[in-house]
Structure formats: C-alpha cells, structure tokens
Length: 228
Ligand SMILES: Nc1ncnc2c1ncn2[C@@H]1O[C@H](COP(=O)(O)OP(=O)(O)OP(=O)(O)O)[C@@H](O)[C@H]1O
Ligand SMILES: [Mg+2]
Image: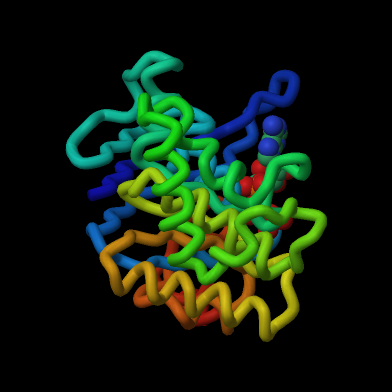
C-alpha cells in the first residue's frame, strides 16, 4: 500500500547540507500494524511528516496505492491527506472550545456530507473508542486518555487508508497508554493500517513489526544488534 524508495531529506544550514533521512526504503502492506522506533533526533517525526504529506523529501519516491505522492499540487495533497490519512499526536491536538463530537466531526466538514450524517458518523467513531457518553464534553473536561481516544476517533472518522501516530502514548501514564494501544490493536483487527512512532520498546512490541531508525537510516533490527 505504501512504498518508499530511496527517500532522502536534508536541510541546508548556510552552506552546509545536513542529511536527516538517508535513502530510506520501506513497504507497508494494507492491514499492517507497524512501529517505527528510534532515539531522539533520529528522524522519526521527519519521516512521519513526509508519510503524512505534511513535508516533502529532498529526493526519492513515495507511492500510496500506486499514486505518486510527490508530484501532486499542494491543494491536492491536502485533499489526499484529509481522505487517506488519520493523524494522532503525542499532545492530542484537539480544539479546546469544541465538544468531543465537534472535534471528531472536523475532518468531515470538507467531505460534502450533510450535517446530520456528519454527526452520525462522528458519533459512530466516538462509540468505537468508547466515548459516546462524553460526546458533549470539551477537551479540558476530559482525562488525557479520553482526549487521546477523541483524537483517535477523529483520525478514523474519514475511514482513512492508514493512521499515522507520533508518540501516541508519550503524554500518558503506562496504564492509560496500554488502553490506547489496545484500542489501536482493536482497530487494526478491524482492518485499519497503523504506523506508530515511539521510542518506547514496550509500546513498540504491541505492533506486528518493528523497524528501527538511527541517524536517518532504517534497520530491521535494533542498532545494537546490527553493530554487534
Ligand atoms: N527545519 C529543520 N531544519 C534543520 N534541521 C532540522 C529541521 N527539522 C528537524 N531537523 C533536524 O532533524 C533531525 C531529526 O529530527 P526529528 O524531529 O525527525 O527527530 P525525532 O526522531 O522525531 O526526535 P524526537 O524523538 O525527539 O521527537 C534532528 O537532528 C533535527 O535537529
Ligand atoms: Mg519526534
């Protein structure tokens, strides 16, 4: 479903070109639950931003279901992003003045659905994460775990091709984090493809496959093993 080929990203700092991602190649199948692990500064968020069409690589290819993702115009990319990708962030990124239901409804605003249908779809997504009884609560009235579940409901409401989660349990205590991971597991069991970034081995173990990133390069094994 996703194919990255020789993807590189570098930043120009003055005259110097700093490589951040180095010729990354990666295939992700539909229905996979993949974890990407790596230390701070290794390029995880940079990779996630490219996967999420929030940023462009310096060179290489990115295909999603055989569509070339790197030749599209900016507004087409925004559309693809909205239709195909659900985002989950460490710090939830909910709008505090909107209710849980309104937050979940947001990605549907551009979909041309009627208001009533939007509400129904948003409520269905909230049910999936077990929060239908909190639909009228605003984020400040919810716990951290509940906020992340609202964010996950928002991520799935458009029935995306895949979910990109950057440190989704990073701001949560262990037990709440486990609930979020169980929810990902459940959604994955229903067919949702998940790509999750984490620096926590215990969190990564919940995925079907782990790949490691170190200094902008991908490894199939932990870096210690690679260099042992
Ligand atoms: N706009 C930028 N200009 C220059 N360098 C950048 C820029 N954005 C990120 N970098 C560099 O790219 C490297 C990778 O950053 P990235 O945010 O992808 O790391 P990460 O693996 O997500 O780390 P963390 O676990 O701390 O979130 C870092 O060394 C960072 O300094
Ligand atoms: Mg990061």
